[in-house]
Length: 409
Image 1 (cartoon, rainbow, N blue to C red):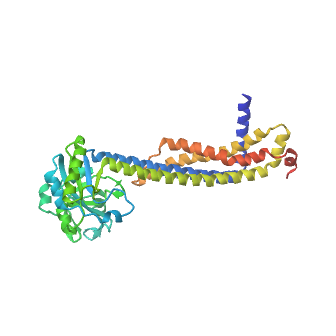
Image 2 (cartoon, rainbow, N blue to C red):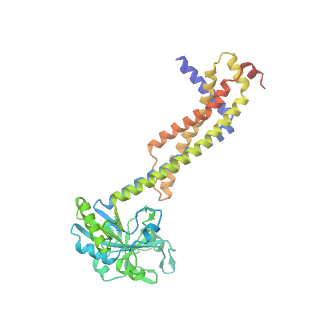
Image 3 (cartoon, helix red, strand yellow):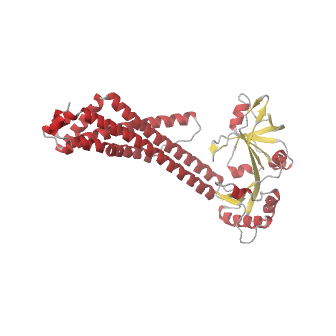
């Protein structure tokens, strides 16, 4: 009981010391607050992004896979750019020969397209996609207004399109976009549908896209390009069978020598999840480095402030030791003060972080979610910073000679 009373008295003395040096304490606490906000918001963005991507990947379907020229993630393009393009003839071969496949649909993409409407334009920011009437079944995109185009419209190269909600809001802020004509590369397209709002997926804004029939897309950009193939197996249980079938067909069509590696990539839900996990791991490592640097700088500030405080209170320390305070009492007093400053900054930083999270959620499309573990980890880290960086000043104060300390002005 006596130990608890002594410790409570130590805490009270630490609080009084902080209040007597308000500006100095505030500046130290401010450094801790900024560090904690940096840690929590960074982790909230990573966690929110992680949950969003995993949710969208889950919606793609476990029986859907893609064939493409390049891997999902790569660092050296030269290793893959000499591969043959994936052609329409190869896509037709899969449609004809694959027995376990439910459907096959080609896709092609063009970044940086400008969409025009009656003197207004989007700027070169739009993601243009060529697809078939089956495109939305493999890309988890639903129609909010209007309709999707039909197989007849694709086969007959009709100039219809479905646009993202961001384009609809920009070009048609006060009217319904359905039935309006937009211009892409000098060609008039009739808007027949508007996609539901989907946000950002895999670095791509899915609300800033235009989907046109693949037959029209190839007329705009030519067939001498590498297509991506979206394939849906008959069921999740047939996924591996479908993949093996498609690999066999493509190796024959592309004349890949026996024993050589595939000159194309098979991308499944698992492939995307693994690639995303690797990216998250890199982001987490980068976040930990930033957090360490931030807390280290704050810790140095705590050490400096505590050394100044001890210099100013040398006489007080001498008097305390003269009336019976032991070395551990002096050390505990200044360690408590350092930890208390750090934890005050930590708690304030957590409160501000939740406020910032609310602002980000309200005014941006960025997914944010503060994980519970990072809150507890932040409190633990700031306490450790207080102990680690407060130990040297506290030890220095505890080692002061009683007579010399009393004599010091």
